[in-house]
Amino acid sequence: MDKKFLSALLFSIALHAGLVGILFFGDFTTETKLQTNTAMAQEVKPIEATVVNADKLQKAINKIKKQKADDKAAEKRRIQDIEKRASDAKKRRAKEEARIKKLEKQRKKKEQEKKRADKAAKESAAKALKAEKIRKQKEQEQQKAEDAAAQARTKRLKAEAAAKKADDLRKKQIAERKRQEKEAADRAAREKQLADQMAAEMASRNKARQQQMMTEVQRYAALITGVINQNMINDRSTMEGKSCKLLISLAPSGFVTKASVTGGDAVVCEAAKRAVYKAGTLPVSKDPEVFKEMRNLRVTVVPEF
Image (tube, rainbow, N blue to C red; front, side):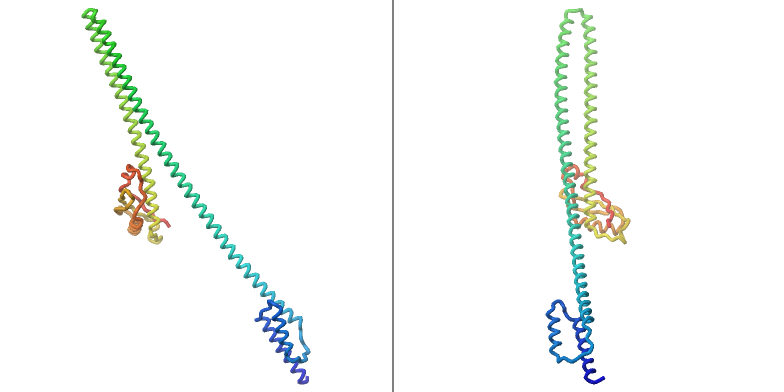
């Protein structure tokens, strides 16, 4: 093999190696760079080479281009997946916000229904009281009419008796006395029956009112327990399965004047007391009678996790 052929072969190998390096590290997004590299290669003084495989070189170029296209498509799919997850999360947040709004609307609706029921109960009680007053007034008028009739009858009997004999007058007087005694007894019995009915009705009303007030106290006790749990710092390892009983003294505004432990786990009780004083003001009833029952309120706090 002569020296000229050997030099041409070595130069061809070096040139191919350089082109392969450019293919791996260069950018083939445009044809301009490939043409530039080709032009630079043409500026080199041509040397005869016996082996130049253009098909292999083009296959290498096509393989690199395909790899870059695949990488670009994979990156596009990755970005689309991230955007889809973000969109799904946004939809879930919107759905949760709508659910919370619906629950709040239901709660307000129930409060309005309760207010209407309370108002109807008060109006019914007022009507019953007015009807009772009218009934008593009619009874008094009827009693006056009966008394007037009795007096008239007595006068008539006395006028008739004046014309009769003394014995008949005595018998009539005895009969009249017995009649009056019986009438008085009957009237006393009616009055007692009426008084018993009124007492039973008042007792029933007082019992219903007391039950209503205790229900309200229990409702506010549940609200206060919820506020305490919201402000508590809970530790499952030391508090799970434990509870605390508190006696809370409240001002009419709901301001906590005192919180005392009446029983329970020391760790839970300490956290519960801190939560009470952190809240500062707790929900209380505007009804003076209900507030009187909950001024000194006993609650049991169970940590929530």
